Image 1 (cartoon, rainbow, N blue to C red):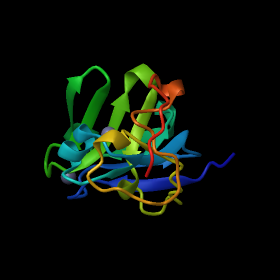
Image 2: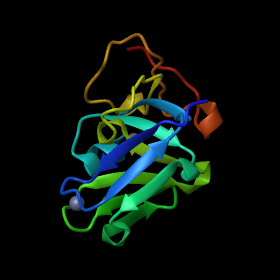
Image 3: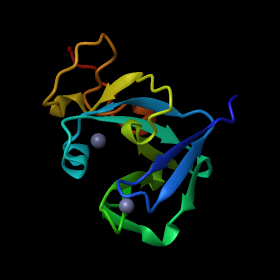
Length: 143
Ligand SMILES: [Zn+2]
Ligand SMILES: [Zn+2]
């Protein structure tokens, strides 16, 4: 059990936050929502208990958008840069791995691989949607 903290900030630096300890899960998400929100072909995700994520600066600059009850996406109201996404149904917070450059990102799985626009042949499990433990089909796809 680690109590190491990793720092993150928005694009302009008005908002800073930390994540502490060990991620509950890590991987790559290929879903269309992540792609549109982040304007990136695929996103590294790290999932944390809500208590592990703390805004340490600029809390008043934090905006939130929720297209669905599943994802509350936090961003900086000054620069529009992304911060993290709360997933209330799972009681987890997703911090894109690119936000925490010092975190030793070790992706375990690929999720929503059915939607991929950037196939990644790395030998790791490719879930059609998400694992059964997260309410998905658990179905695997070939690379
Ligand atoms: Zn900002
Ligand atoms: Zn996604």
